[in-house]
Amino acid sequence: CLTDQSSCGCCLIQKQMQRLEEHFNKTTEELNKEVTKSKTALQNITSRIAFSVTFTDTRFLCYGPFRDDKPIIYNNVFLNLGGGYNVGTGIFTVPRSGVYTIAISIYSDAGAAGSLLAACASLQVNGQLVAASTDKNSYDQEDSATIVVVLQLRAEDQVAVNLLKDCFLCDNSHYNTFSAFLLYAAE
Ligand SMILES: *[C@@H]1O[C@H](CO)[C@@H](O)[C@H](O)[C@H]1NC(C)=O
Image (cartoon, rainbow, N blue to C red; front, side):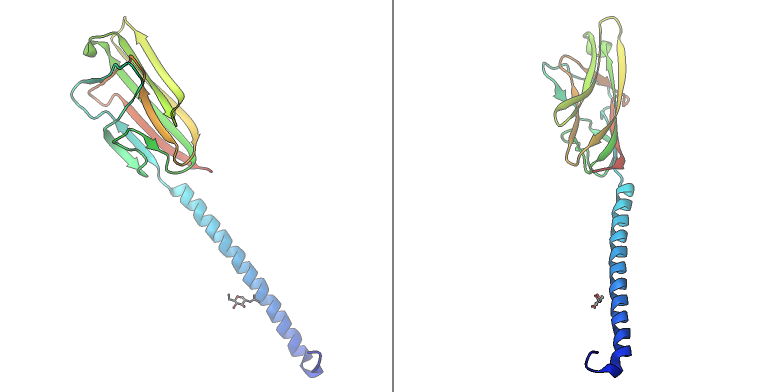
């Protein structure tokens, strides 16, 4: 450009073109970033995590009482989207960080076990008590209770239900359930 004055106009056009190209390149890059972000957000929205489990038996059966707290293993799986519930251990391992709704229903029948009624269970996250329900009364025969909580959980958190010591739960019609679902994903 400096040495050949006659090519100056052409040179300017070339520089303009180069700047335009840079601009388009940058815009394309930014658009691609936005597309990636949107795809991730969409994945978060559409990821399905939900499980619902219950005691397995249709025969009348009681679990407990024991001298210590014991994890409850729900054998009958209605639903296990995302595969977080482990039917061998009874533990729900959170597949993805987010806000979860968790519900537990328990039932006990003193007549069935021949001992004083004691329907109690607790919800544990990583071995820490989050919520519990207890109903001990020697004068009535049946009790049921429900716990519902909404919690912010992190991926790999372990959610379990414990039978509290000296308590027992009974079932023959899926009276005892443990369910949770991802309300929305969040880091
Ligand atoms: C724009 O992107 C193309 C393709 O990636 C590349 O070949 C070119 O050198 C880039 N231009 C500028 C000015 O950065």
